[in-house]
Image 1 (cartoon, helix red, strand yellow):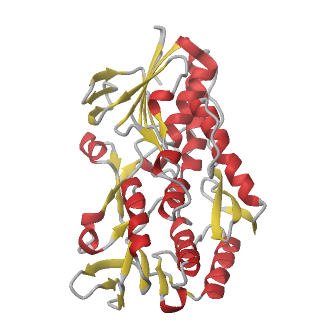
Image 2 (tube, one colour; image 1 turned 45 degrees about the vertical axis):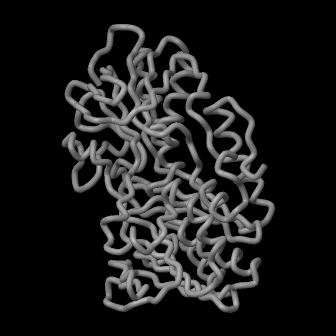
Image 3 (cartoon, rainbow, N blue to C red; image 1 turned 135 degrees about the horizontal axis):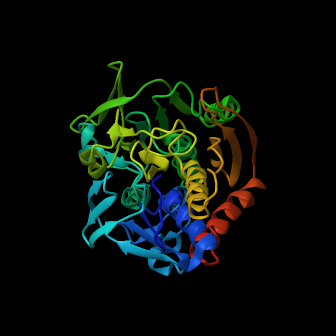
Length: 389
């Protein structure tokens, strides 16, 4: 990072998901008004990925899971609700719909964009349940659904939160059972991965057992290539077909277009130093789904990466050496239905195979997942919140 001799330090963070929120909170906690942080996001509120499922399956209303960025009251942090139009990594300058911002340190935390149009027929005849709008709209679709053939299909890899399609299959089973529609329905899950959660064989085994117990058909190592809206058939990459009455899809994930235009993407994503999350441009970092950092695209990994970048920035401000290297560790929570939750603790070491362990599933672990959400909202927004209240 280039030498910085003016105060306060100007930090521009693009994207207010797990990574952007954790980074700005850390800087505010440590430096207060001694840092000038601009946090830019095109949306007005933050929603946990698991909260989308809570709304989709009728547990909560949309307004109960939205956390408005305007409520952030962290010293030294200013939120700007704007679309990012252009990024110049050399000058560390960003053009937005709310004006231009120049930075001493620029951090990309823009996540990945969903592209339903990349799969023929998906936008016309499927339901994208991975976006906030799509998941919330899927609630009404499920309420109107009277039973039949349900196919949950993933279009390609990588995709955010690898356990989520499996969770959705289990929650669809629970939903149809509660409504007395399960006996006249079938559920098929199509995954391009060899197992539900390859980095954790124990988690994959537990999910596969749950599928077997509930009569859910898992089609692993297969991807959906297209939908035929006229025949209501999903065509897989091996040429086989799956008829459906309801298709719930995970669209193709792409690097945001503005990042592509900036020239920062290599092989589809932003390349970073695995230990520091630094890009090849001095003073420019990237964290989370927008990167090719070698970990799953999930919020907990973005949060961990943001902590490493925060330490590097703090060390620069204090004239100290570099901070700790990113260790690839993350903990995620997997819903099995019937109020049971499992905890997956996994580490992706640099240059080595991932390792981890599974705890649960159990009803008791639902409270652990709840505290995970509560603690983040308290930390990032200064508010009390319970995920299912």
